[in-house]
Length: 299
Image (cartoon, rainbow, N blue to C red; front, side, top):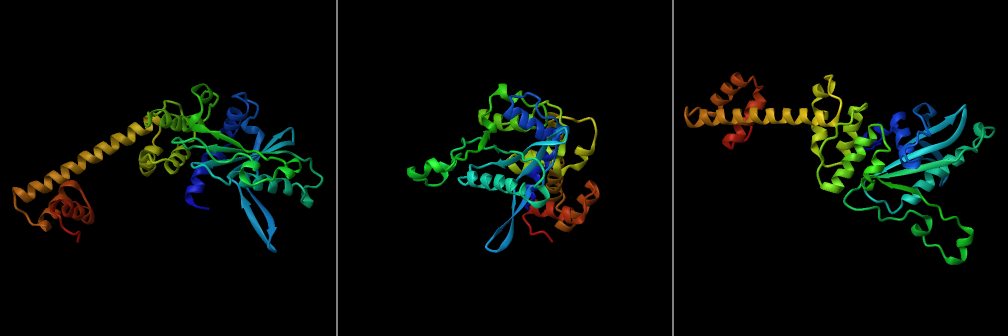
């Protein structure tokens, strides 16, 4: 599994976030499922094809259990682009889960339904690919009465209304708000909503968007580790302040190099030594600055 795939799943693996998404999208914000009702469901299932055992893996899956009775298996898939084969993929995931209920170790256990939510995060365009089996594969009219028209549940997160955004109470609200703002305004103003899973939110947004600020925060571990900062607004303020400070420091270094070159007529080696001492730089870093300003190749 790629690092991108893993980062996309981390936030949704938290029971409080998973339950909040299901309650918000399926039950209009009613607290039907609690975090305590959920337990891990293996996202992998095995099947046999061409005489070989193969695996199929969905995004995130949870057992919904009440009083020791499994009510359903809930699956969640993330998409940033519409997938023309999404119906078949979901059909495969759900079918594998139903097939697992027939395994010898499960034969005496109660059966349960399988529900998959497809979360589409694209904001430049709406989902324009099939959401039913009839639209995915060619089905002659004569056999339609004998073939169920399987449909999938696609939720266009960026196209949720502000009213529906208020159905959410977990960190997912901040994530959804980002994509809604990008659709509406083409830019993101950070939310004051308090975050519980800060690093997971940043990881998700860093891999699903082109906004480099989220990766900048992740790269500055000291900001994440410090206490007292609890929402996206404060996190991005801190990283932007750090970025400005870094830019000012770089500007001072470049200005000093030019001064040594133009006023003091020092050689590149002499300039490197002086800025190492003045700005507490390692030799390699100092050489890069000098090469950049003087148009040289780094040593």
